[in-house]
Image (cartoon, rainbow, N blue to C red; front, side, top):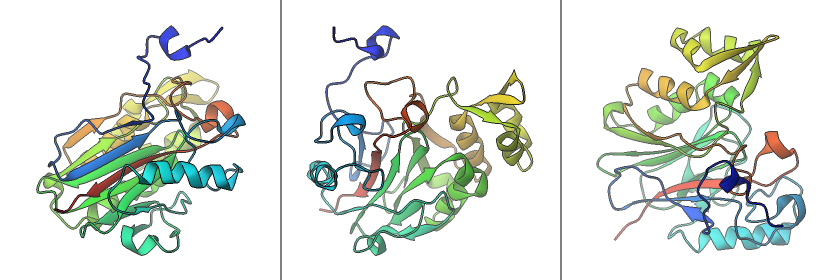
Length: 258
């Protein structure tokens, strides 16, 4: 029997491997967010795995990335993500992936991309559509300042920036220890509301709430998305916490020039 877990827990199924950010960005700001559906990978990576660092067949990853690139009008700049707070120009990461966790572009020369499988991808643009960015925010990077650094690297007033929180681990699945809670609450007291005590020194953390609080502190008030769960939506998303060895999705934003 072909059992659809998404349907069983009330999540609408999607037949397409892609969707786009639901935000009021200018028409020439384009987005693409992949799922695990489609693609050429097999086994634990089955589907559209774009992660070249997870042990998948390199040829399958190459074909998957080509499938994604066919949907994007400029070259996609994949990063060598290290849970850092480093931001680079997307165009500078095309020839050789940069050791960074966010990229920014204002020239329309490259697409900014964040690969994830539970960590939070955040896409950015400004109201005028002159600059875009993408950040990979695992809890370490989020606590360390990756979103703050990305906002500053965009070099526009924060009030002009909008952010989209793409699929990540949801608040019912993200179990963390005291160290994670302390990392956020020590610098941001309002973060207390993002943690639910479940006993034994463990908490359920809401990474979407933590990202919203962080962005709001920076002056970003136009925040969208943040309503999916990569762990629970088994048929739609890869999840490292759920499966261990698995693939990666990618969330992309770019400027489409005339």
